[in-house]
Amino acid sequence: MQDNMKTRRKPTIRISHSDHARLSALASAVAARNPQASDELLAELERARIVSDRSISAGAVQMGSTVMFKPDTGDAKTVTLVFPGDADISEGKVSILTPIGTALIGLSAGQSIMWTARDGRRHELSVLAVNRPAREVDAADQSAPAP
Image 1 (tube, helix red, strand yellow):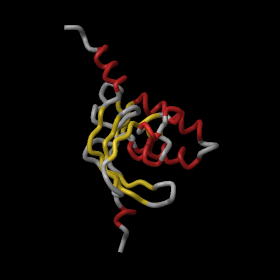
Image 2: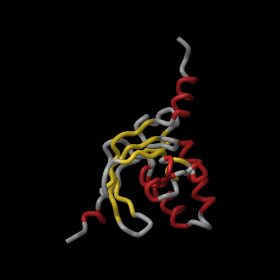
Image 3: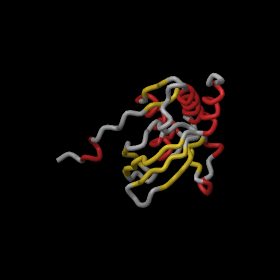
Image 4: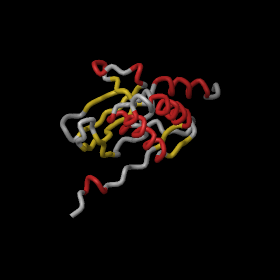
């Protein structure tokens, strides 16, 4: 009998063109010192549907998004997805280079994904809500024509 956790397909993810470019550069930059994190991030980027910055859904997890998710290990958690230099777990800021950060990128509310923790254990998380990064909202508001 096959293990359902191993055969389950990953959900479709969408990543903005600018996030894709920045994350590809980050993965390349850390490849020598953290090959596992680099490889995992690159794998997610390769399977992502890349969309224009203007057409990325507000409900898709992107860099700077605040995400509420429910892990299979307990209660719902809320984190903000950030670049490594901004990570601070005490403030709920999770690096994209962590296994859970890499798992979250591109997901939308209602989607679930299997991910592997650093200890090798497989887990599942379900995204409950996504709040768009403030910088994206501000940029979108500024580009809108004046009434």
